[in-house]
Structure formats: structure tokens, C-alpha cells
Length: 112
Length: 114
Image (spheres, each protein chain N blue to C red):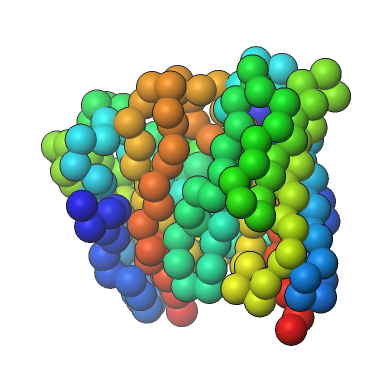
């Protein structure tokens, strides 16, 4: 089955800095890669996703890149704000027909 | 839509007792997932239903755990008997299986077994 590794487990940045979280996956058949944000006391919520026919996707301050050859994908957050502080999870699946396999999560702390 | 609704939000029970967690998926979704979240193991998939049929229950830890989906709008996860190591946050998520597989999560049930 699919195995997703995520790094780092914790990340502390100053407000305004950029943050990068990296994930690798094992199953070359995976073609859907979402990122979820989990705030304290809440369930994970999708913030951005990418499919394997795309190398990069941006949505305002967040972007995701995918390298299919190396089987890794990354989340980039620019101009971080204190409200970006949360746990971020990457995941992988074969789109539409299987379950998501999640990484262990990254706790992002943005200091004012 | 109110999103995925889970109940209760918090449950404290004594070891050996039966615990039932409930989930109402988003209307129209045909896939439902139960996850368990702990600090040590992260988000683990317990069981996955598609069109109310269990498709993959390989993540269910042992026979003490069971899940049902009697209809498209309701699912339960039961632990009997409960043990302290079952303490975790249990999430239910739903999606519409297809090209767009965004899974929507509920708020979770924090279970503490003492």
C-alpha cells in the first residue's frame, strides 16, 4: 500500500517568512495529492490539492509543487501570518477510487 | 449543508464499557471514512464505506471495533469493550467518489477511556 512521509514534524517561523513542508510517497500509481490544515479542536480541512498531470498550483499565498519522477510534493506558504499556525497534513491517493493515505503532520507555528 | 456531523464531541468512559460514535455524512456523498488520530500514529484509516458497503476495513484494530452504515445518512463506530489505549480523536469524513475526491471531515469525537 501507499506510504507517505512528511517533514518536518514541527516548523517555527517569524511572521512574514515563508514556510515549506515536504512529503514523499511510495506508490507511483497515486495521482491525487491534497493538503489539509487542522486547527486546534477541529477536523482537517482541505486547503489545496494537485493532480499528477500538473507540476505546480497556486492559490494566493499557498502553492504546491509535485515531482512525479522523484515522488515528492511540497507545500509553500509565503508571507506567513499568525493565523497560519496549525497542523498541516499531506496525503496521497489514486484519484476517486481509493482512500487517502496521510503523512504524520507538521505543526507550523508562526510568531508575530 | 451543515457539513459532516459527529456526535458526541467528547466521550469519557470506563474501561470495559461499550462506546458508540455517530456520524452523519454530507448529503449526496457516497463514500464515508472513519479515521483515528493519535499523537503517535497520526491519522489512521479505520474503515471505508462506498454506497453504504464496507470496502476496506483492514485498519480496524481488532474485533472490539465494528462499524455500520445502515443508510446513506448515518454511520456508527462501536468499541466493545473499550480499553484505555483506544483513547484518541475519532474523525468521520465523507466524499463523493470520482475525479474530485476532496474528503470533508467532521469535528471529531475525543474519546477518553479511563
